[in-house]
Length: 103
Image (tube, rainbow, N blue to C red; front, side, top):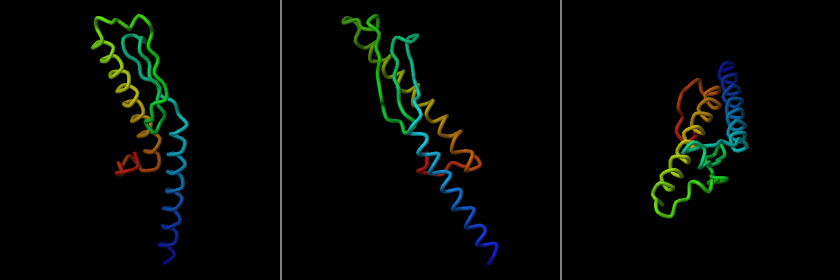
């Protein structure tokens, strides 16, 4: 019975650490870029879009599709980086196991 209590304490501590790590992810800002930096997006660790910056040279009325592609690429770059950071941060507590719904 003592082992069970000790195990439950460890699980509770791990849960608290993971919740704190999740909160900290929300405070991190991740940037994604495209086109050599003509499009930059910023998201937080919860994958919420915070900002989009587009340099004037990226805007060509004759080629709107290029701008759309640059924005899409920059967003996907930021999301990919956010996933990496979440996996690193949360992996400390999960031992590398991917737990559905956590990240």
